[in-house]
Length: 304
Image (tube, rainbow, N blue to C red; front, side):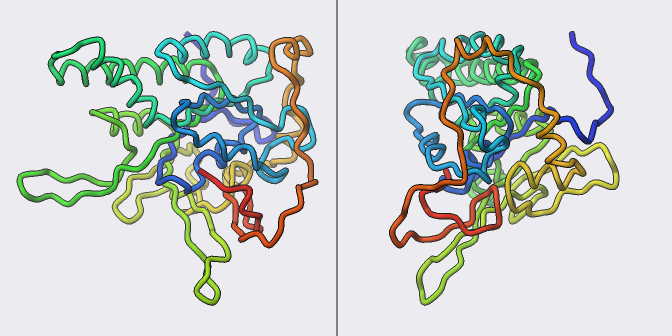
């Protein structure tokens, strides 16, 4: 049991839970990378974490520090998720980890479903999907109880109209079974991600990444913001820092008031090189607007 405060401190980093979903390349992983002191739990065969290699200073929360670049742990076996949660606990206690993203829930659910099918050959599909639903619910509760920001990333299950005896459904996260709806109800913020292309002379010269915070075009999205006078833009353009600003937080003050990291954590996690303003030279790059800024960025900061 833990005590939950209902008071927001405008200079302290909030603790929130998100489910962001959309097609590949719509900025999910790069948006997650903007959270402070991030641990990425990445399903090995998905590969979306590759977009983290091109992060620039405006896409991270603490540029110029050893804590700017996310820590990435790969998941390939069934016990990896449970092991990662236990391994993360001392790093959370030391404040080296203040956010966790799961990249992605769609592929993790597929991995676990394959495990259930393999260990129950010929089993009743209803029982297998029921076991998957129970596992995903328990996993959500377990990770949310760690007391850090949590971002679940997922691909999009596109809207389908009713017909031919099928009920149809709105666009939603691509998660097998009933958890497609339940997971969205179990987080504070459900965002749908998209981007618009900017063309000149028939060529794509930029992209504007968007997170829809309210239903859009048949896709589910919603927010839970306690203050009646706080409304997130729809769409939200930018990254986590723009999200905090829209909620009334002073980003500079939040960054300044982040807790110090226990020095002993450096034994467990190697200190990575700081992300600074310097960028490698790029020859004639196509330009893109990253989810963390409305400024035009090189395509090497490609998003998932």
